[in-house]
Amino acid sequence: MSCIVLQLGQCGNQVGQRVFDTLIEDNLTHLNPSKLSIENRLSINDYVRHSLDRFFIQHENNLTARALAIDTELKVIDQLMNEKSQSKRHWSYEKKCVIEGRLGSGNNWACGYRNGSLAEENILNSLRWQLENSDRVDAILPILSLAGGTGSGLGAYVVECIRDELPRSFLLTTIVVPYTSGEVVVQNYNSLLTLSHLYHSADALLVFENDILQQYAKKLVSCSGLDRPTNIHDMNNILTRHLCSFLQPISNKNASICEINYLLESLLPNSFYKLLTLRCVPQLSDQALDFSTYKWSSLIKNLSQMYINNSYLDEGLNWSLKPHQTRTKSVANLFLARSYDKDDIDQDLKQYFNHSTLYSSYTPSSDYYSVFNYRDKSYLNYEKYISLISNCQTPISALDRIVSKSWQLFGQKAYLHHYLKYDVDEQAFLNGFVQIEQVIKSYKDL
Image 1 (cartoon, rainbow, N blue to C red):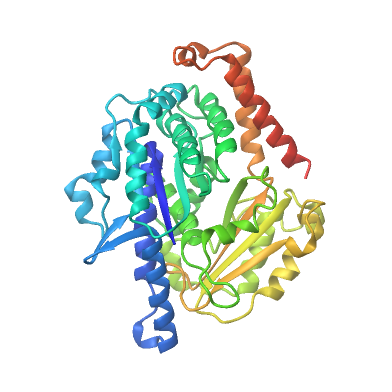
Image 2 (image 1 turned 30 degrees about the horizontal axis):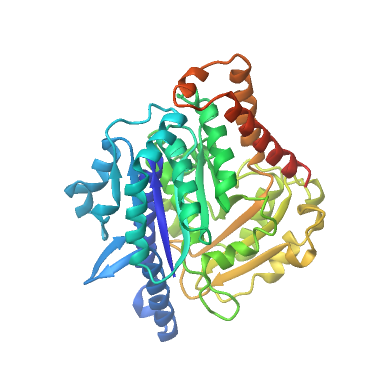
């Protein structure tokens, strides 16, 4: 089973490249071979084989990413494809799957959407090449930012095209929400229009927020003892570490590798609830890993308190809050645990996450959460690592903020002329407001 990554715009391409680097890094990271049993070694080989088959085309020891890299400007694509950059990687992009323009989208959703229509044939031809080199596609994984023009506008158009081209393929779209105080004055317009289009065409939206990623990066840089400001690379590393903890192979109770579609089935019981978030523990800097040891019980306890506090970070939590005082509710949760540890985590999860107050009133107790493990390989350099993927209320505050700020501009008819010249009129904005406000209300009513 294969997954095809769509890297859309500057953010999508920077994150997408780091995703493939992280996948390779994880595949190469494991205990000293002399400490591994034969069973461990066989399991690790199986893990690596599934990972490579899922994300790379393999030919004569060469790895080609199952990806489309798309941008309307040259800068980021040139950085991806220059010889110096490619020589540092264990893999490469297929040139016919790299699509670049020269005009840009001017941070304008409507311009980006128009550029998508102009590039549609090239994009679909590249996608078909990827499909021809896949036995079977498990999921298609677009990655994009909501704020700019290319990732948002062109990204929305491309996802719609792929939905029409491949109506039965699963579309899991990773979206990056812009800073609350961003540099692009129309970023909330762009975000609103992108969300309204993606909510119609994608099966699920995995949400990351720049504000949270920067807080997380500041914490790790501070804990590492480094005297420097955080940068975009720190944030991308955190995002991709989280994302790859979900994408890498995981096993069910029968020790069979699960497809991504199968994992997502339990998270999406209702087609209207599509917003997913990722929380992961432990949250340690690389410098602290060698000096830290964790038990599953303490990790799950931290994860529980993060969830109850509606926080992505394991610091600054109100530990006096109890499950009945939770600040978020879920439609469903999914746990992925990775380590060499054979200990069972079911009892700890039952203790901390089997509370009706954490879930919507219509979620049956049998569907509160699902658990998957990989017990013969740790994740990256972490002795133990657990990821919680939730279909919950957490992203709603970001969506509420986007809608509120968009209304402020729209009420003054500010900047609408930038969109009107590309035939995106006031009705398109009103349709977007209606749809996203309905999403917000539905989640708030859980």
